[in-house]
Length: 309
Figure 1: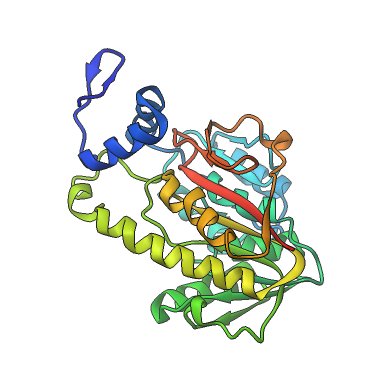
Figure 2: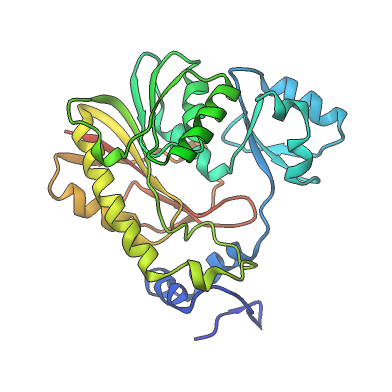
């Protein structure tokens, strides 16, 4: 079927099967909201790296450069750029010196909900390129024992580069996270699982019908299930982890969690929403989890907190 937005038929590159999946999961009205999000060009956003700078310094630089900005209501370190491109930000010395890190607002949320603790053994299971890893390091003032896992050697080198540039204290493990020895155990785990990216699609991408396929989703689910099982195995009893994806499809999110938790001694910990009540949210099939609706500020993103019992 054709979808209409404000009375006009959309001309888009979104695969028909995805539209049908979204309609089955969310209904037509919310599907139209998601498709609007795919159509929007997102603002450039970044996070202040508090290991090297503070928000006040960054604000002064932006004002001197006549760059318009606002902050996300839920974080003093999350900046939204209003009037210049990403390239302009990348040309600033504060970017070159690692005082800021270009990162989507949605991808800042998993580390915030993890609430990383100083002194804790923390694992980032699928860490490259390092945005969340270095965010955790900054949130703990480099006083946590952080391990970042990345199996692809090229991506691992990019991860190491970003960690060094941000001044983060992190050990990089170049290994498939599914094969981490069960001898290891961690106080906190962030599993931002590889996924189809259904929350980050851009309507302008003419290659979508070739690159975004049912097979991509199927392969992602297999990987997600295996990684979540491993995460729970190596999480210490009584401790918590975050499972997140940049997908809005329940088959990669709630259904993966339900499948794994059915055979694991773990439970959902409801995410506290008070501090981020201005974020556009989609309904989820598991109470206490959140799914961010894509728009001009946010990518589509799913987040769940899990405790091992």
